[in-house]
Image (cartoon, rainbow, N blue to C red):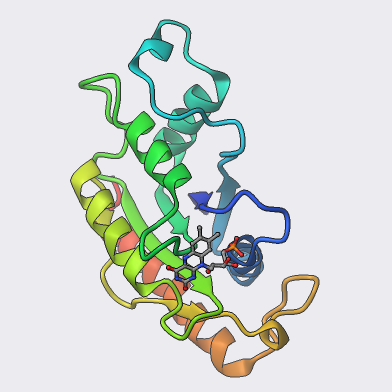
Length: 182
Ligand code: FNR
């Protein structure tokens, strides 16, 4: 089974994006294995820390290295993706010459209460992931307007249309990894 390193760009406990990611994990059962990347302890990027790199950084890099693909689930903060994701991307591009993103199939998704469901933040993130060297899935795009009634507390997707759409999204990502993975 393909392993996905999963990055959730919100640190708060009740994050809607984490709930979306958990629902995706449940939906992908038996097809894709989710390996969650813990970002709560990740420091801001600082070259000096390479002298004695924090475990949060070395673990993140190892998870990317070991993964067949990487999935970013991002909130939109002021029409951009969240800064913790920028730090995550930056750390894994360094030290110079040891960028672990290169050639990794990647996909972006996100949710917010707003009608455009993080579209603008996601587009910035796609560009960032391209610059970092990943192979970014362009289609389907997944801008999810959060509707609490569409997701149950145990991470089932209760809205049939949303479930079908997200199943298609995951199938496309699995195919993308199959086609572009190393
Ligand atoms: C937001 N929010 C927001 N929503 C949106 O659709 N577009 C935006 O540009 C912003 N900007 C923004 C900035 C900041 C600093 C915060 C804290 C929030 C609202 C945001 O979508 C909402 O808080 C989500 O619930 C955040 O995602 P999580 O934490 O629930 O995963």
